[in-house]
Length: 199
Image 1 (cartoon, helix red, strand yellow):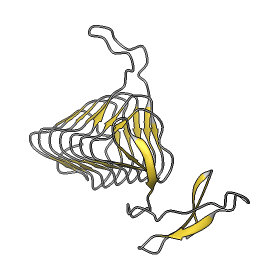
Image 2 (tube, one colour):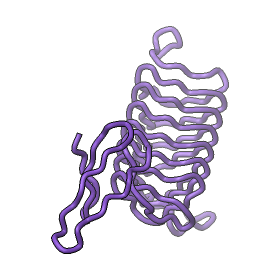
Image 3 (cartoon, rainbow, N blue to C red):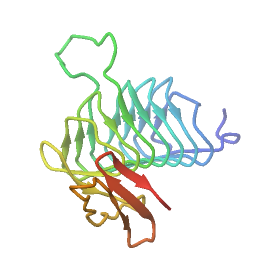
Image 4 (cartoon, one colour):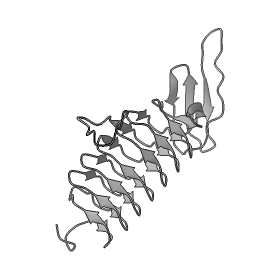
């Protein structure tokens, strides 16, 4: 596809070896997008990003500066990846020891990965989960959960709008859950099984 006919933007300094890029996507300076990469519509791939073959990126994804996405990663729609976030694809890495198969990492719809966070290979980050800046994630993160620290631990729940949800107390006798409402107006039920959207 020629510059005149493509419906996405590539900065003059970027190296892009795939044409599987959705309309409205922008790829900025000094990026290296390798072959067999799929990037959806209306994405923003910021400066100094690298994406290896076989990575799949959904629609409306933001990848901020200095992020590398490795073979074995799938990023669903509406994910935000903060600057200098780190991912891996090999749980037992050694120099000069090529991978037979990468450990697969999945970022589910709407997840946020904060600046300088680390997500160890093979993890699943749930829908609309929020990984705080600098957190080191070594296990799967559930939908709508907020993770902080090193190693990262779940410390609460977040709304689709990314605000922290107020604490919901479950009745210890009956096991009944209570609904909570975010300041943005969306309503949720929180119980031992996690978060359910009510709005």
